[in-house]
Length: 128
Image 1 (cartoon, rainbow, N blue to C red):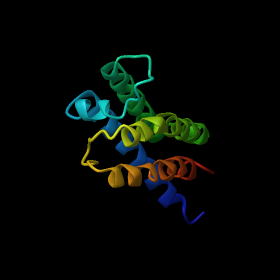
Image 2: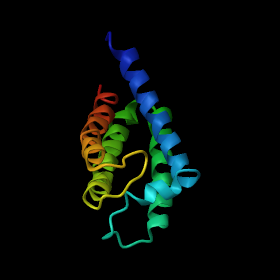
Image 3: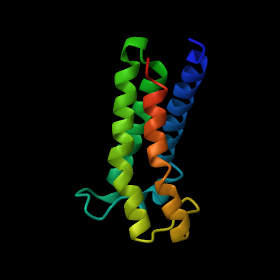
Image 4: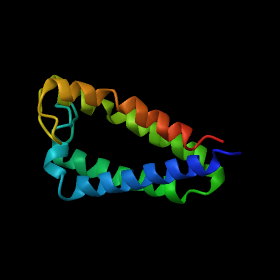
């Protein structure tokens, strides 16, 4: 299959980006990530950021390290995670919260269109 190296590269890149994002959740960008936690989440915002950071690191590591027979399910789990955190992006937009340079409604709205791309990336890079 000609696109196998591309899929592998895409999977590894996504895994690396998830590990980096998860690390940012736990360190230097913790405050900014709190802007994406919807008010209806029944946990403290900082706890939600920490837990999601651990989840991102675990998902990223799984995308990088999972044996071939588990890559498809790992991609589906990552896609599910991206869908599950989408309400946070919506909350940032609807509640006009600035973070990560998203300091206008136009920028926050544009950000919403990237989440489906992440879902597709997770699924496509781990499909057989």
